[in-house]
Length: 217
Image (cartoon, rainbow, N blue to C red; front, side, top):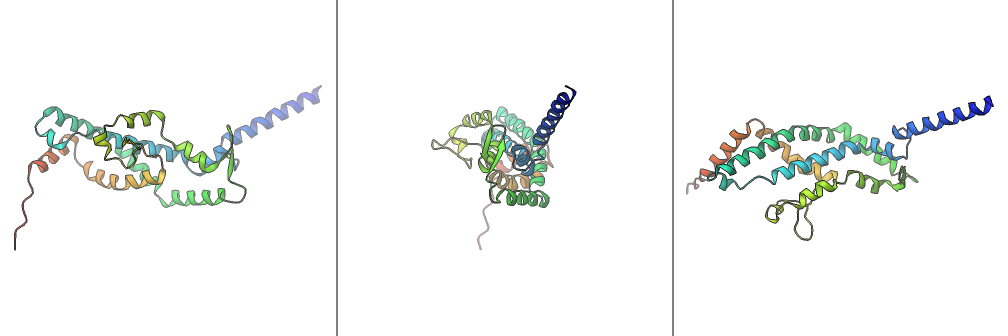
């Protein structure tokens, strides 16, 4: 009897150890290991923040109206306040995901999973192609998709991704999001040097000042 109990305990410990290794991402060819190797959690967060900031930016009112309507001006200040609150985290994460260390890790992981017989990985939902699994993991949430549907068609023209009806769509590709943020963070570095109200005043001043015609030779 004691022998049977000992065997049961060993099996339970072995099962528990394997389960822990699986969830910890130690076992190659499994979902958790794939997520860890490709830094999918960091990618997902980066895409999420990028979509949030784009959505906030699309809420900016027309600059021309702000000079005539105090409500519109306050809306601009409120929107820029939100942008400035969100952008430091996004740009810090951008520096991480574009670093040489991060890029090298992705290349090494991709090289491993592109090896013969490694097209699929084991997940809690069964065996899946790792490329499909990656796309599903970083896919924008349904809530984010619904928020983008609410963007009016005029402002949707500013979106790089739109559906057949012209509706704005959130970014879902890591490479696309990274390219989108590159120029954004450069612009934001200058913006962050000013407060929201000061920035709006500067924008309105520039709008109110007509460009001087070039002197003819």
